[in-house]
Image (cartoon, rainbow, N blue to C red):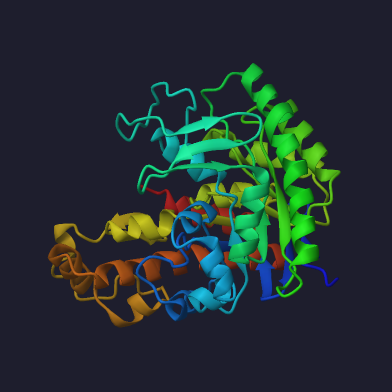
Length: 400
């Protein structure tokens, strides 16, 4: 059977774990490091596939949970898979659905408390909609309240039905509210056994679904802020026949680079590593320097739809009054479609008027900004200027 994924390393950063490389999939290649935009429901909100491609995106990541609920992975399978369904001719990723099952189940953002306790960043008091045991997660749909249960096997069946080039094993997303004892239990009783079950089902599906290209599977490392657990999980998953690895779970921002290093020091060097849910420039630099190859995050598009646009001097809100009569390009140094064709005053007008085009133009700019940043980081590793580029960029970006 043809290989689902190949990974070749090209350049290494002296004194660090950073590297450049090429991931080859049935739908094309990804030059790494790379930022992967998130098209949650088989679309990046407000953009056509052609507009997304023009931002320089090399791949897109879709969400297994949302596509399972609507339209259903069986429908996407009937359509010929995700690429055919959404008219996208480059590589695709799908997450396992585990994050959404648990986060939407209790109504919290990045830090999720499965016991329903108070969180520093609550979205409001909501009914608990998810229940976890060692077999999987039972949950109520946030759409209609219907009951469902995700297991490792079902997650793999959903992702194979969707047909992404790169899929992720089902794991338990713990939070910083869970104590050390719970983190140990989660790894040993759920994340590790679920990884085994995910891999077995994935291999079975690749063998029987010969009418589709083979799909790759990444194991997902958990362990929160605990070095021993991160290293243990990395060694456990690293000994298995995964095609690559997801670096996931809860961690504090101030030590994200260190935690990434713990995982990448233990994982096989010849396989790619994907950092889940990261897009802030300082985090991107830290994670790449410590061994991460690819990233995904909804943030660039989400903040863009709220009028917050990236610049080399930080993020600014184009709805501020100062932009109402600014008839220059929003960012004269930016090569995106938005900045090449529209003024700040026009963007300001679109947002103030509630025009849908505001979402499109802001998303194009923000996605292009982060994609170009990671592309520039890749080049800086190749030409030996990484540390100088990092210092100049971050000094400018966080100058405020």
